[in-house]
Length: 231
Image 1 (cartoon, rainbow, N blue to C red):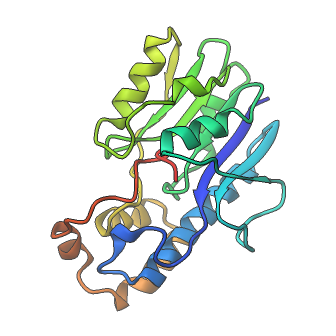
Image 2 (image 1 turned 30 degrees about the horizontal axis):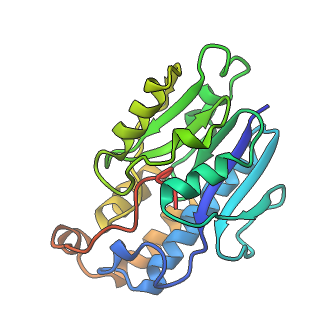
Image 3 (image 1 turned 90 degrees about the horizontal axis):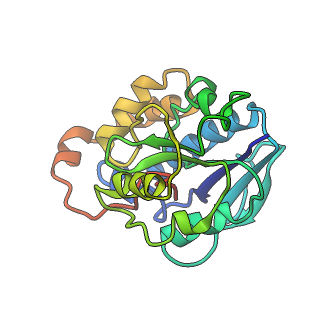
């Protein structure tokens, strides 16, 4: 079976989802990040897996369900931290980040099907912002990630090119939107109706001023790429 990896950052105000501020405060952004992480972990907890691992920058809190091993993220740039996460696995592994609370079992089903690794050596989930939200490797090789430029619009294309260039047969997962900006949060909350993220967003929006306008005027650099622009 496949090892499932979730790479995440502890949702601490001022350290996560800074591109949501404004219109959200750092504390509100952290609440949205925690909700997105909790939704992601809940989905992964219900999937068949050899092992479930939370690769965490920070400390696990009560948002972590049972059934996960927790390991610290490695040091260095994001490509190095992703490479270190895959180095934990001896067999097939599938990694997702914490920025897609609309994640569902159906979205990951192709990569977890009984024959998922018979016809594919890798699975790739592109993100709408040019990054990627999921990456699966039948034979985890950290060198498939090291040196891939992260946090740029071409991150996903560069990572996919690396996989294809290594001769891997790449299966495609659906394109998802990461929650990076206030506009993203609004669209994902609508898409993930019934999720914890949508509930937190609905509670916070009345106290938040003009998220779309604030998002359009944003000039601050991003927090990082999509998962796997994972955090």
